[in-house]
View 1 (tube, rainbow, N blue to C red):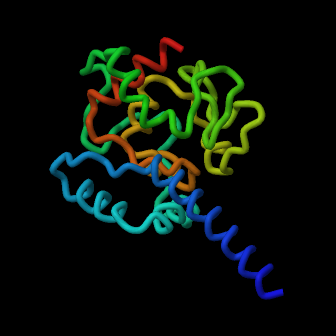
View 2 (view 1 turned 120 degrees about the horizontal axis):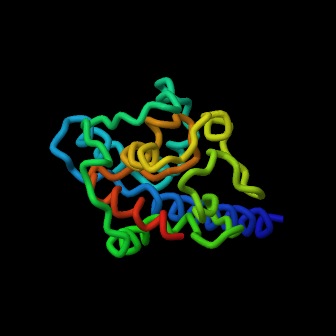
Length: 181
């Protein structure tokens, strides 16, 4: 009996560790933009993998940004940047851990095929968070630009563990790539 309990505990531990590592791969700390908020967010995201994996499940501390609001925290606008789809494809490697670009292929996150112009929470076969399903967001280029800066700010309670990119050019490049698929 003791060996069965030990085996189950070991299997559970391995499973929990793998899940935490998978989520940690999606939750890269935002790049330093020199602001105190970015520094605090980066510091919060440097904890143990288990802490990172638990973060998305925490109760949202702030109200969601309005669905039609596209203001970023640093005031940047997508219109100020020219996205490079080739660079965006390279940067998308961070996203590909959790997202596929092929239609109908869901991974940890939903397929991002034809995401530009799509209503949030609408990919068939993917189990979205209630926050995402009820966000009222349509993924315009400007809304994606805002979301990729800090997903949890835009949709508090989202399952997406990615902390965001402070680099506005990188966000513009990834959006340019997403428009090509």
